[in-house]
Amino acid sequence: MKRNIKLRYTFILGLSLFIPIIIGHNDFPFLTWKYLRYDVLQGLIYTVIYWEGNLFILTKMKQLYPDPDYTAKRITLVVVLVTLFSASFSVLGCFTISPYLFDDPPTKESVFGHLNSTLMLCYFITALYEGADYFQRYKEGLIENERIKKENIISQFELLKQQVSPHFLFNSLNTLISIIPEDQNLAVKYTQHLSQVYRYVLQHKDMDWVPLQTELKFIRSFFFLNQIRFGEHIKLNIQLDENKTYQKIAPLSLQILVENALKHNVISKDKPLSIDILEENGQLIVKNNLQKKKNSEGTRLGLQNVVNRYKHLTGKPVMILESTDFFSVSLPLVTA
Image (cartoon, rainbow, N blue to C red; front, side, top):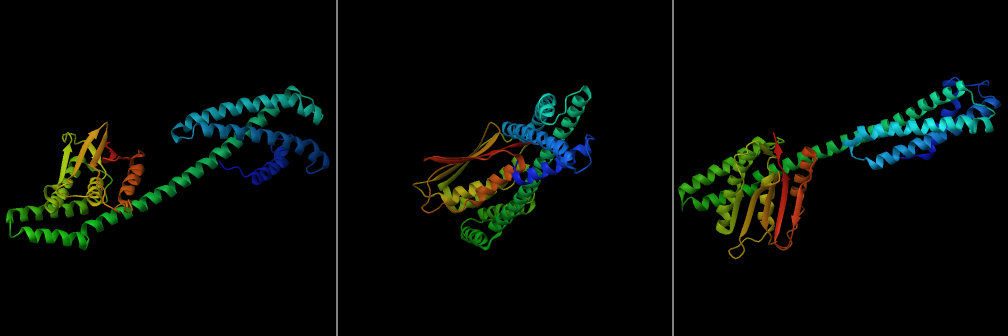
């Protein structure tokens, strides 16, 4: 809630100038000295006090309940506190400020009239700030959604390029050529898995969610292609109850995490790479033993895209843990 003092007091001064006419309490002709001295000055003093008091309440409640989920509770408390503050000071002002500074002794009618106009003014102030705050959050939400959409588009495009790039195709075809003379059955199986990888990317790249079973079937094909290249130096351990077909995952999330593990870690006979996929407390965990290559930090764009996508789709965080021995990423599972 931005407090532009100059703009606020310009508005307060203008409002004070017309408050006596709006509420029908102007005792003197408009813009005469007595009008300015008694009506406008009195209105200005009260308006400043009510405005600053209400703004203090609004600011404190915003600090106590910043989460949008508590908006209803916060507004309810604001209305109650604003009403109590405004009504109390209105009655107090009728018996102190008005009679001593403006020769306006309290009567039953003046007290109730002042109370009524005070509450109208304070509810207007509250509505003004809440409306401005809501509009600001709505605008920020639109900007954030557009940013996430753009990132998703870029992420999907980069994933597609990664899978169908000449480099990936070149490596796949080289591997295929090398195994055809040695094992034609394996070559056929390799071609089938390669086809499944391409088909999955093309069919699911624009979806928000896919069944966990479907993503696991894809990751097995993807891992099979890499295992032909690295041999027994890489292992994939899937420790899941795969009957839980109601669980869903953002497509290609596992591919990014498995690809990162293969790309950034040393893989050799002496240092095999093991990747575990398991579930704990509604989280899908992808974990690998850590044996970083030198200068292999990279840009982490793929991992950051996964984090941003889950934040956009679920509002839940993606947990990333790194120790001297392992690296793990936890993805929230979604129940259909």
